[in-house]
Image (cartoon, rainbow, N blue to C red; front, side):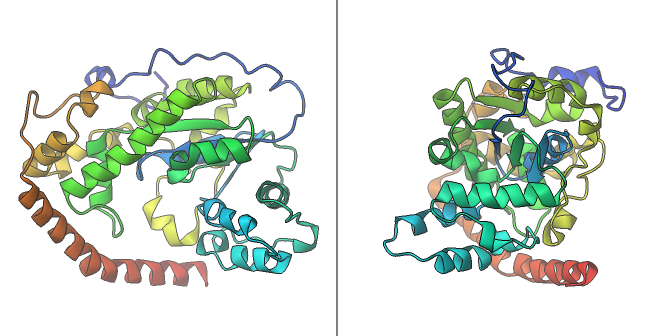
Length: 345
């Protein structure tokens, strides 16, 4: 166990690393400068995508960018006939997710002939801005990446995928505390299952280029897991990685990622046991069937637990949506305005 992560043996036994993954180096990588390759991290929101992105971005041969949902949104533009470079540039400049990158693009040197060339040009400039022009890997920790793994495979040849998995009950508890996440166990179950399914599909479709990482193992054994990931990418491990200081969190999400840049806290793993209501746990476990134990997580309520009726599920969803549209909306406005003031925007 890493010296920075003391924890009980009981907690450690609840989580495991899939034994089909290995630490073999990828041929041709790691020993010499090669064309930059992409690493797409994906998983459920609040599964540790940002934490992992920051850890990998701390490596001398990797750089991490803010989330890049815009790469999917601008793709259809290139299928439009007679689209001009100015229109492509404007669509990117106006995209809210690109605005949070907050760096001045030299558009005159950007190749906008294709989607791939546009992204490569921008990433080259961003890497230079972060003093990592020679980095071998771009780390993209957009949670929804694995929804579009086939698209990414087509547009970024020989890319890598990392599917990060976290106990769904911990994901639900984390989202409940935020002003944008799930507010009820029915929606939380759906929002955990969907990214899990596309992540498992990605593992199946690209077995040699997709690895699974368990959030709990990353927190309990950060050095071991970072070594494993570096081996997967064909790089040498660097000790500073575990602090995760390789990413500047955008101002509007700083309050949601206060632990980024700090050593992983094992106490966060089972914090959900102190915060979730018994009823919410029962509903979540009933709606996720046997996915928890199949992934190595012990159920709080073993055996078969009947799920709520469809009418009851609809009522629970309605109450959660009402809170999202009223109280949470008010909280979001306060948070965004506060963070804008603190960042001087």
